[in-house]
Image (cartoon, rainbow, N blue to C red; front, side, top):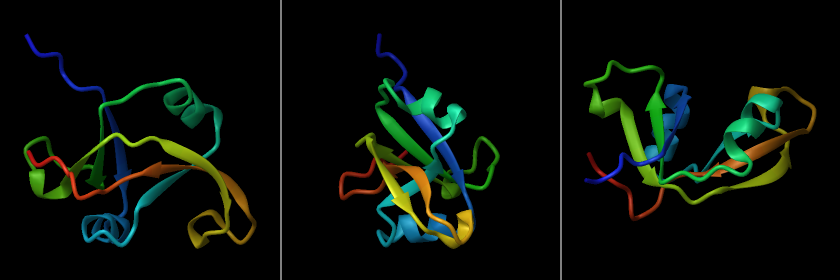
Length: 101
């Protein structure tokens, strides 16, 4: 019996989903908070799923699934987080080896 893959699911805005889908955006950012630290540090996943918002269960057109390639900690300045630098988890997304469902 095959075990279900361990999947990290990240909901993103449409503009970011489109950038990831076309290969323009190789990382998705999450602030370094207790919430994201608990979900990422010391955890192992098989896949990362990017969803355009919160699609219905059967809507595969708003889902991208990639092999888990880990994350890096970075300090960035991005309009989404305001004008000051912030510490983020830069989760690697996208690749030529994307999993299709």
